[in-house]
Amino acid sequence: MSSKPKLPHWKQGLISGYQEFRAGAYLSQKTQYTKLGVDGQNPETMVITCADSRVNPTAIFNAHPGELFALRNVANIVPPYDDNQGGVHGASATIEFAVTVLEVDAIVVMGHESCGGITAYLDGLGDSQETKFIGPWIKLLDKAYARLEPDEKHPDRCQQELEYAGVLQSMDNLMTYPFVQKAVKAQNLSLLGSYFSIIRGVLMFADEKGSFHEVQVR
Ligand SMILES: [Zn+2]
Image 1: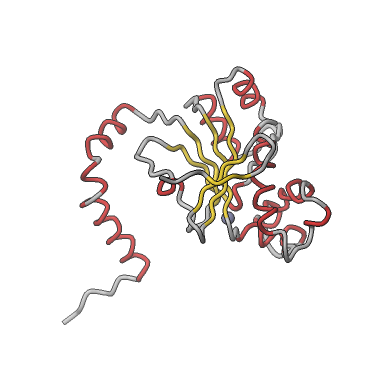
Image 2: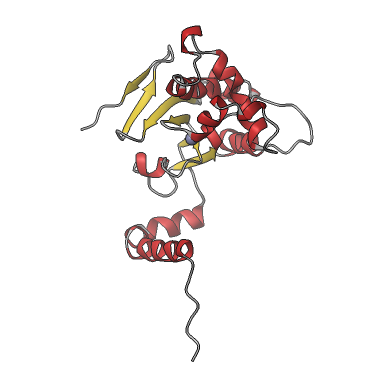
């Protein structure tokens, strides 16, 4: 007698998660899903955040389907505008789609505590030949690192400072995209820096001077 092969743990987790979704969140938002599927999306906000499994913008902002257009990558990096014709730029294409096609009202860059991408940068991965893609990617944090005050530039101590600076640098890099600049100048687009503390569950917004402040909870 043959017994059914046991599913790997990860797959069982995906299936039971999906079943819970169907019985819970999906069921209560079924009409919304159908309407969005037929009519298309019209999100007001784009979120650019880390791919980190502990940082979920949909949960943090209690967002419903159709509300957040998200770009996620290692360390929530916005690469500077690159005019290289014919290059394939996933992050740039997603930003262009959000701004020129979806015409979002705002782009929120969200950094976070204990970011592995930031740690890897501070550990020197950006300058090593160990990796094919991740090294050159986090090397883009050089400019963020250059924003730190001289007394902050200590690899053992500046993790959080660099997480903040990375958000601010990504916002500056957004402004190197001509279509972002145009939309911001026309006041059709706002940019906002933010930061999530995983340990405390606290969200912060950056002010115009680049300081981060906790968002009030009710
Ligand atoms: Zn991260």
